[in-house]
Amino acid sequence: MTCIDGPEKLQALECALRELEPDFERHGFVDTASLHRYLRARKGDVKAAARMLHATLKWRKAADLSSLSVSEFPEELASGKMFVAGHD
Image 1 (cartoon, rainbow, N blue to C red):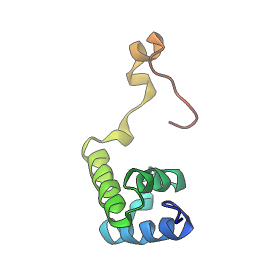
Image 2: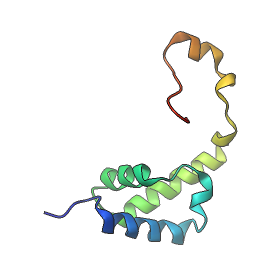
Image 3: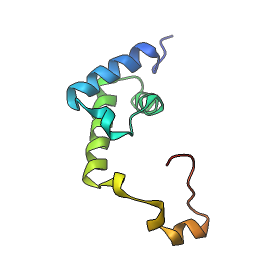
């Protein structure tokens, strides 16, 4: 049985993503856990996972998510429905 998110698939996904987004590391969103998540979501299909992750990076950039701050959501934090975990 082949692992859908094994080391070979992770490396292949990094290569495929680099073709679509050469400097994807600068986003700070893509880490090993993200690569695993996208590979599992696409049942090990590297090309599909790369397209999906590339679309996510484009959306994150368009929505300017990196500029959001926890201080912008005081009501949500106070409600207990949202919390900061680690470096989120």
